Image 1 (tube, rainbow, N blue to C red):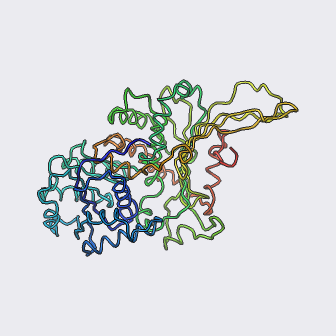
Image 2: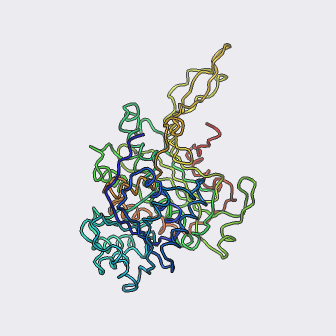
Image 3: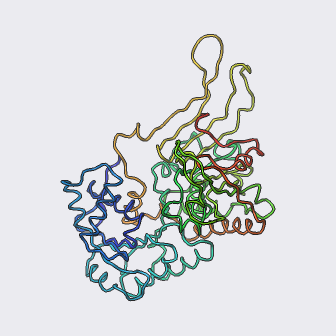
Length: 491
């Protein structure tokens, strides 16, 4: 693994510090980077939330949540004790103009450390909190702010957030985070494509039949139910995660890996996405909601039972997306995401064209098209599916086998997870792993057209039993094109 280089000293204020994101992801990630000596001792983490806690109570809360999710004894861990000393808690309702902002000002004091603000908050608070930071003169020159996805709930709210936050922080100081972009296998996409001559000549409509991108979750809405019911799978997952993955697969080769060079190429893909209108919405976009079922033999309730009320919110979406440019003309990108599916996994499947002529006899077996499978989670890997001869006498028998790169098997040491990498990237000022304003707004323009078409066509809400891979209509969408969703068991 590459050497872990320390970052410069920083003061990081996490707003929403008692929420699931901060306690479950951000603070454990910072602790791991502290253990690997990437965080200087003079750095500080300032936790901001409405709960009335003191430093000791907050540190105990962080400790307990860490123990709940990690197998590690912290009782005599000197790393933990040193890390906990860097945690300061400030009770504050960040949406209020006055409140206890003076205490937050006192905590920052005259520190010359790099100043960072992470808004682990609902998108509706991004602009008010940014304006409050400016009102209380906390956004000193060089400060940076991190915004969690989604940025808004449609194009108009996204543009308003971008304008209001942009009035306080320059574009080069705004880090719009999508944790999928921090995954090692996602970052490797660029090197896989542009660092190997093998793929690029075939990476187009001549060599590729279609692309599938799936982000499947086995969990339900859970603690996010109140937010999720106002968003749904299209806003929550497709507009950001899946479109970003699609951009990395489809973008043209950049002249270099500079932040704006890569993001400009991604923007071109978003701008080339064919709009999906009312006349084709039911054929190209399937929306569904899970009903009661079973996952790994355990019965689970349906979405409306979990929510405790009736709802028309989709928990599953599959989309046939098309890119109107020379490279991808005629190549569909099938996007799929859902909750309460059969298992948790995220992967990209590049299916190449079939061989033009079958040279083997019918009883030898069927020649299947080559597939490049990029597994993002839970086990990061890259597999290239090839046809080969099954060893042995008695004629030619075919077998479909993988050339397999498993990250766990290939690399000796654990590497930082997505949030760990992204947090360090913010401190270093590396914008390449984050979304630019025009990317966000272009993605919302395309997504809004789908939302409007759903409304205009009164698009039906399908159902699927929990523990399955979506409704029958999703499979039929591919069947009409003589294709099918990739099934790991068939590979």
